[in-house]
Amino acid sequence: MDLFSPVALGELQLANRVVMAPLTRLRCGGEGVPGDLVVEHYRQRAGLGMIITEGAWPSPQSRGYVGQPGIVTDEQVAGWRRVADAVHERGGLVVMQLMHAGRVTHPEINGGRRVEAPSPIAIEGVARTPGGKLPYPVPAELTTDDVRGIVQDVVLAARRAIEAGLDGVELHGANGYLLHEFLSPAANERTDEYGGTPANRARLVVEVVTAVAEAVGAGRVGLRISPEHNIQGAFETDGADLLLTYGSLLDQLRPLGLAYLSVLHQEPGGELVQELRRRFGGPLIANSGFGTVTTREEAVQLIDAAHAEAVAVGRAVIANPDLVERWAGEHPENEPQPHLFYSNGAEGYTDYPVLEQAG
Ligand SMILES: Cc1cc2nc3c(=O)[nH]c(=O)nc-3n(C[C@H](O)[C@H](O)[C@H](O)COP(=O)(O)O)c2cc1C
Image (tube, rainbow, N blue to C red):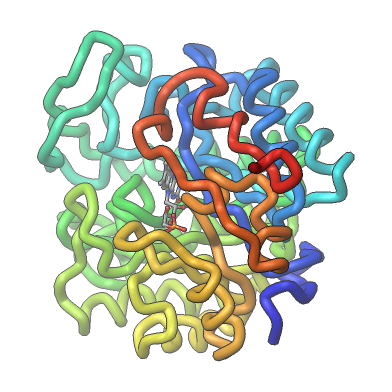
């Protein structure tokens, strides 16, 4: 298969297999509303096969970063509608990543609300709050009823994303945020039906994905996972337990007929990811993680070898709004500027040149 050929991920019809990975950029201000700059950023990248937005918070307490967008208030929905319209005008597709940060936040970030997680275990490190860096707090252990409430929050957020005109939603089950915290024995020490065994640790993700699929249609719902990713205290070190947990999850998701499974793992073509792909039984979007920047060569190889249906590309898309054109023609690329990933304003965000402007 060819990286530049079309592909269907459920109901999503992509013109090519280069997908914009979800990329948090923190330019949505104190109210979490995408404005002109954010609209322009996504509009510029509409030539990707599909855009997956930065993680958006489904409830105020689930906000992980200052400047992160939400999908809760009417103003946020209106902002996202402008993003969707701008991408659609250029013939693109845009799916929203829904992200509950779990314990990776601080009351100084989420408006003084409590920090929620499966178990009262703080992560190491510091949160960047408006008042400076502060140690992550010990989170409150969610009650069983609280957990059910989160399912409802995420369903509402998914409905709002669709109401805003987005083409679909992706549940963020990766990188040490809430859903990954439930999956990982390092973060989940619960004794109710949401912890204790691999199937119990998978339960919340199964419930959230199933409920969202019922609400907006499975063919436009994806899930992102990052098994074995050593990040934010959610490291899964027991291979047998991992396979049982993610296997249970994917066996239960398989009958839903979701649009796609997106996996962040350093070896997308390796045994683990390919086993999870078989268990899921639907389209796979691959990404080899933060270690090395995804290159054209890697993306071409993943599709040529049939290791995935599409490839999620992060930093190269930040730096090259016209990445598909550049990769298709083997043109030179702009270099990403990591010190501007989480800064403010247009610099390092909407000012990367496209081909005809370059040199
Ligand atoms: C600035 C930045 C922000 C990111 N934000 C998110 C995010 O909101 N959600 C997510 O699932 N992954 C996020 N990631 C991970 C990327 O989606 C991707 O997996 C990672 O950058 C590795 O791919 P690459 O080598 O193509 O950049 C982020 C990565 C970067 C560099």
